[in-house]
Image (tube, rainbow, N blue to C red; front, side, top):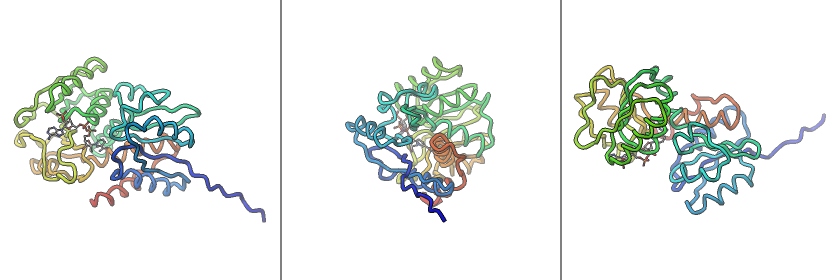
Length: 288
Ligand code: NDP
């Protein structure tokens, strides 16, 4: 009987962030690699901003298959990449890098993950819908660009800091075909009656500040509105719970987190991602 040579080499991916210790993506991706029998390892790596250039050289030197980027590297990483996908270029930020031959290619899967969750978890086709985003940060930008590309008819950006909100609305108008406007966020936001989808894209309500909710007049939340939250931890935010009490349908941020990771998994490995395994792994982390 001949003995087969065993390979001890693992294919490496991971995340660069600062801080990064509490990022749970490793749990989801590692569970997916194991479920698919892949000899891959997802590393959670703390990279200080001033060491990003060295870290990207290390990524190439270690022949890593790719990397996720989180705060504060999503924009700063761009000069170290060979190419960007059209969506990453439009969003202006990268959360997933894929190594292809000698090239590092930047993608943004945050907005695509959200879109897939809207379609598959909420069962809503965004085409022709009127959408309101609370917030204009990195997550709102990625989601709004993908929603515009998916054919929503109208986007309203509601943000505390006017310059950031105005800039995002202008960017959407100039770079996509969507009708987009900025609305200042002074008092409680009253949701207009023709809005189809309302999205909290701020960090309000994120663990440990779980009792905080964005300032929205809850009486303006109707039964036929889809109310979404980007916050994955806790999945059932106080905002979503309040919207449910008004009779609205809700969509939590866990689906977005699972799908953005699943899209990265598929791009890195070429293997169909085990969505249920990934979701369960995160649910265990968040205790839901
Ligand atoms: P940013 O820091 O880029 O943006 C934060 C946004 O929240 C800004 O619009 C900011 O307004 C607003 N904001 C924060 N605090 C308040 C407040 N007290 N009152 C009013 N507005 C406020 O963060 P990101 O966009 O990267 O992330 C936002 C959230 O999205 C985070 O909680 C993150 O965990 C979540 N996220 C979830 C993902 C998922 O897969 N589910 C993926 C990525 C992010 P201003 O401009 O005025 O400062």
